[in-house]
Length: 432
Image 1 (tube, rainbow, N blue to C red):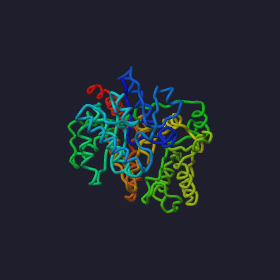
Image 2 (cartoon, rainbow, N blue to C red):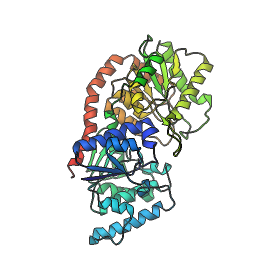
Image 3 (cartoon, helix red, strand yellow):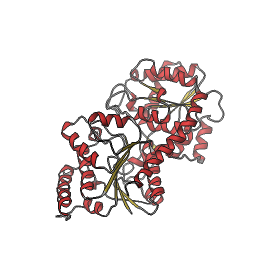
Image 4 (tube, one colour):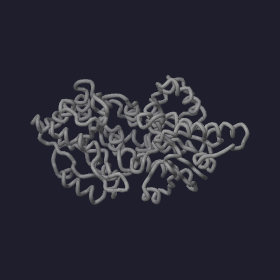
């Protein structure tokens, strides 16, 4: 059996694997769970993964440009492929072909894996990107292949020129699985046919940490195993600020006040706060690969600087080490509580029964996935809005006062959530 994974998560080398840590939380379980239900399959993808990943996870990478190559000709090529596929659907013959069509014709199942960017948000990545992705999906459907979109959070769809075509493509998927339930209501409100849609949970809940020597060394260095008092992790990213864009730099110190006040409150209550990054960076190939600090780190460092200038909080430190995906989740497991502006940072906590307060996005484009993920984990009461004065502090206080009950609730809800994450892949067997 041949499986081809395409979709809006198709990115340049390293982006899924070594950038935003949450991306890797998803991709590794996705591949492994596909093999759990299709053990004899051969999996190819347009996502550009490392040689290590390809070998360890038994995946073959095909050229990124088969899906989208950041070229002026991307839309033109996709439209040509659509015309070829339309002829095939009527005659059963290919009048011509392209490298993408060649791959699809060898495939039994085409999976669109787009996360939260199957919608207008895809166009933040590149010109006409959502439309090109829709065409690739539709080409696969017209070529007679089983198609699925799995573990997504579709929307929004405000581009009226594209939305009707999006509805056609969506209607012709053999199955769609969403990783939270809010997307289903959003799709209904836009007029999508959701008769083949199932609301489940994100595969990231299945990702397992590793207790490496480095993780143990870092934990000892920052006192996770020795200091007294509640240990609270704090992850902040560019999406949480009230002013965009997410990568705005530099930012004014004033933009950090709402977060600094939450840290200071924790300090007054006797907590030790660890500011940490949930993203990494790396030199652009062909430079020698080296994991480096990412965008979240400089945000954490400026928050630390703001806290020092205010002179109120004393028990605060930045985790300075560059941690890989496995080490990051292992460190998070040591916290008594986590506050996270990265949703998959929150997943790392929640999936390990760490009571977690989620900081919502503060500026557009907003992401309904944060509330949706919280609902799936039973943590919907702990989503805070940075635009509402005092809301982060209020949610943190509620969580602190109910740590035992919160953890007990997670012990009941997370096994169910993990089973729903596995169900994404079981559902695929129904269409094959």
